[in-house]
Length: 115
Image 1 (cartoon, rainbow, N blue to C red):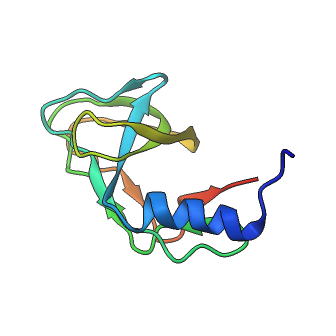
Image 2 (image 1 turned 90 degrees about the vertical axis):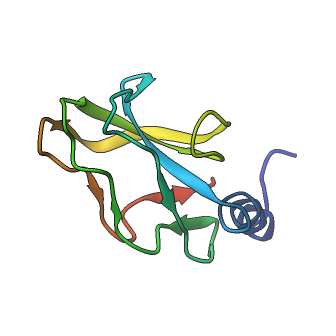
């Protein structure tokens, strides 16, 4: 068998994104941003339905005090530092973060869907 039931998809999302703290990270291609003013941000997700969930509030990263470069990918980790990468995907839009810029993920914008 190679297809998860909707029940199992919702359970996997709930068990891994709602019952324990998770953190969103920004990437320059395959490398997580590594600047002094950058930090992963806590993120909370809505109750999954039909095998998908999304962030329940806006997520604001710190205002950059140096260039973070082009943000090309977004990831979800199970720890504020280190930890395990749970999900990673290209960002819908590439955004350059320079000094005094801020990266924002609007509410319900970060959708995680199991197929």
